[in-house]
Amino acid sequence: MENKFVTVKDSLFCLNGNPFRFIGTNMYELANVDSGTTELMIKDAFNEGFTVIRFWAFEPMPKTKLKEICDTVSEYKIKIIPVLADTWGYLQNYKIDSNWYKDGFKKIILNMFQILSAALNTVKKFYYGN
Image (tube, rainbow, N blue to C red; front, side):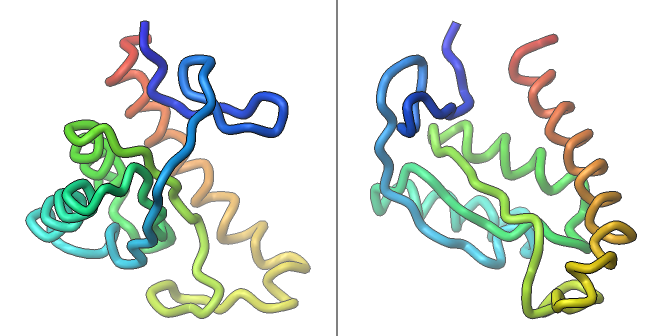
């Protein structure tokens, strides 16, 4: 069975046991645009030869958006790297600063990680059936 997740072996990215090299792009807004725009952004990335998209998946991203992105990139065989925080507070309700690192993340980001982890498990079950 084909593995859809990139792993690391001996400091190298691997896919199905083989070295994985990629051409990537950043799409800061991917998780914060409507479904049609998401589709167009991913399709454009594919047409330009990108094989990996990094996007920012911080609050207040709708939890269903992650599955939507996964479904869309799978059509194009593109891998994703979700970034789980926004240093500048552009779209989230808090700024990441020294107080956030001291204990603010415990109140905010750990809960978000649990929610996104559950969403990723749903996506994994959808693709792998277990």
